[in-house]
Amino acid sequence: MYENPVKVEELAAQLVSFPTEMPPGNEEECAAYLRDYFNDLHIEGSVVEMHRFADKRANLVVRIGPSGKAGLLLSGHLDVVPAGDPTLWDTPAFEPKIREGRLYGRGAADMKGGVAAMVKAIETFKNKELERGIIFVATAGEEMGFDGLKALIRDGKLKDNDALYGVIGEPTELRPVRAHKGGTIFKITFHGRSAHSSRPDLGINAIENAAHFIVELINMRKRLGEIQDPDLGASVLSTTIIEGGIKENVIPESCQVVVDCRRIPSHSREYIYSKLEELASSLRERLPTLQLTIAEILSYDPLNTPIDHPLVKLCEEITGQASETAPYGTEGSLYQKLNIPTIILGPGSVKQAHIPNEYVEIKQLHQAQSLYEELIRRICL
Ligand SMILES: [Zn+2]
Image (cartoon, rainbow, N blue to C red; front, top):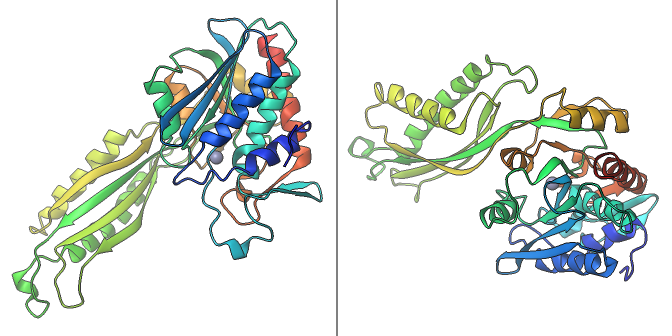
C-alpha cells in the first residue's frame, strides 16, 4: 500500500485497505492509522485522541488550533457496509485499485474518499496560524445506528456548541445537502396462541393478525402522504421484514414485523409510535384477538439546517451549486442536536455506495479537498 500517501487518492486507498465492514466494524486499526498520520504531521498544539468504546471499535477526534469553540467540525465515518458476494467484484473489495481516473474498493465513495479529502485539507494548513480551531472526527459504526458517534457524545468527547459549523463528507457529488428525514425502525411482535392447523379456531394466528395490521400500515402511509413538508416531502413507512411460524401444521403463536419509518421534522418518533398504537387499538375493535408489542430498534432525527443559514449560503457559494435535500440519514442530526449547524458535502455518488465495484472519481477527491480547504480558509483563518 501507500506507506507515505502524498496524494488524496493514495490516502483514500490506504483507508480502503482496512476491512471495516459493519457489522462487526473493526474500525480501531483504521482509526489508529489516522491517529499516527496526524501525530506524524506534528501540528503544534494539536490534540489527537483515540476513543475506544468496544472491542476493536474506536473513533478518532483531532483538535487543531486555538482552544474554545472551534470554527469547523469536519466529520466522516470509517466503517463500511459489507462487501457482499466477492464474485460480483472485479477486484477484491479491500484491495483498492486506482485505474482510469477512479479509485475502486468498498468505502471508496462511502466514505473513505471523503475522510481522506478532509485529512488532506487539514494537512494543508498544518503550519498556518488559525483564528478558530478545527475538529476532525472519524467515527465508527455509522452504518448501524451511529453507535460510535453516540458513544463519543455520551463520553463527553464532543460537547454542545463545540464548533460553529459542521460538515460531513458523505458522498453528495460535491453538492451541499442541508436536510434529510429522520428515521425510526420499529419491531412489532404479534402474540397469538398455537394450535393444530386442523383446528385454527382453537388458536390465535399471529401471522394472520400481522397481515391485517400490515394492510392498515399501507393505509397509514397514504394518510402520512397527505402531510407534506415543503423541503422533504412526506413521511413514509414500509414493512421491510416479516418472520413467523415454526412448522407447516402449527398455527403460529408469534410473528415479528419490522417497520421502517422515514420521518419529516414535524413527525417525531413519539408521534409515529402513538399512531401505531392508535392503529392497533382501532383494529382491535374488529379483531379482538389482536395482541402486539411495539419496540423501537433504531432512531435518528432529521437534519434541517435552514436554507438561508450562513453555512448553507457559504457552501452554495464555494461549490456553485444550490443546496439540496437527501433521502438517506446521516450523523448530521446528532451534530445538530449538539447545536452545531451541519451540512453534508462530499465526493462520490450515493449511487456508488453499498454496491459491488464501488468507486470514486479521483477528480472529485481533489475537488473535495479544495472545497474543504476553502471552508477552512473562510471559517478558521
Ligand atoms: Zn456513509
